[in-house]
Image (cartoon, rainbow, N blue to C red; front, side, top):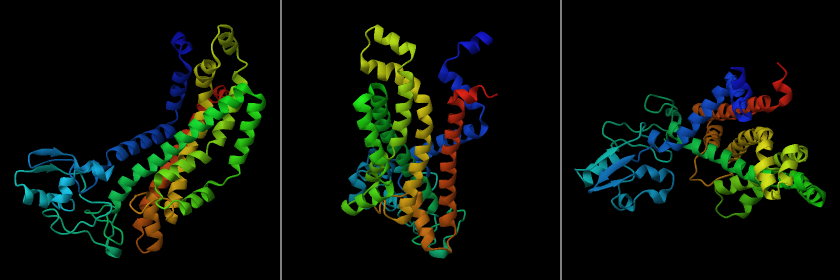
Amino acid sequence: MNEQEKSRGYWSETWRRFRRKKLAMGALVYVVLLALVAICSPMIAGVKPIVCQYKGHLYFPCLGYFNPRLENPVFFHDDIVRAYPRRLKEEDPQSWAIFPLVYNDTQYRVREGDKPGRPENPYGTHGHPSRQNPCGTNVYGYDVFSMLVHGTRTALLVGFVSTGLAALIGITLGALAGYFGGWIDIIISRFIEVVLCVPTLILILAAVAIIQKPNIWYVMAIIGMTSWPGIARLTRGEFIKLKQSEYVSAARSLGASQFRIIFRHILPNALAPVLVPITFSIAAAILIESSLSFLGISTSSSSISWGTILNDGHRNLAMWWLTFFPGTLIFMTVLAYNLIGEALQEVTDPRQRGAR
């Protein structure tokens, strides 16, 4: 048993220590479940069939929730898109369809007759949570549960894409500055300081004012291009420390190129502490996007996010469910990423490894 523990690799040992953190493991399970909800959101809530057979052909209309162009034009031509259960049978009695678990939409109020036996959605202050609408409806009668499910896709997309961009920029610049030093380090360090002086929120507001049709991709790009300095600084410090290691000297003596030394030998050993700010950056990106959506300035009107639901709740204080449910989701998601980040910080810190 002792020999197995001694032969355990660094990442294997880190994962073993991470699994001991019950709160962190619970947070990781929660994030994985959110990812599954985001991927399967059209199958969970929607009015478009997951799969259907219409006029002898097989279609997947639910893909229209990811991109409207993925929904076959035949359904628009035959005026079926707003009432699939009824109109499919009217146009083709031989048709069949499998619908999502919850028959509700993010930007359409289900009306009586759209689906046999399905009453219409209430609206306004009458749209409180019920069996038909578990999280209630907004002032227009749109189902809040469906909006929360599809808004998960926006939240995770913003977190991972913007942080991925920030990590790519930060790790690359930090590695170059830390490894080469000299005038390269001076230029990159001064550039980092300049970017730190640019407020992310002000830059996003300026971009929204300039761009005629702002969307979530612009927001993700701006968040990513302004949140990398912390990652770059930490990567730089790790490279300055590790480039003096014996295995790096051995690689140089064997004739390894600088590119190979940087990205094959040093970078894998420098990633562990860098993962901590990356995890915190995901939480920060989700919080920034939700804040901007709450203000109504981050995305186009067709996009759904938890912040837009909060904005509706702010304008209609009597409808408490518009604030409670999205606010709880934002809190739990940011908390989950912070718990994962804190656990990573503990299990990758050599000083805390020997603390016990």
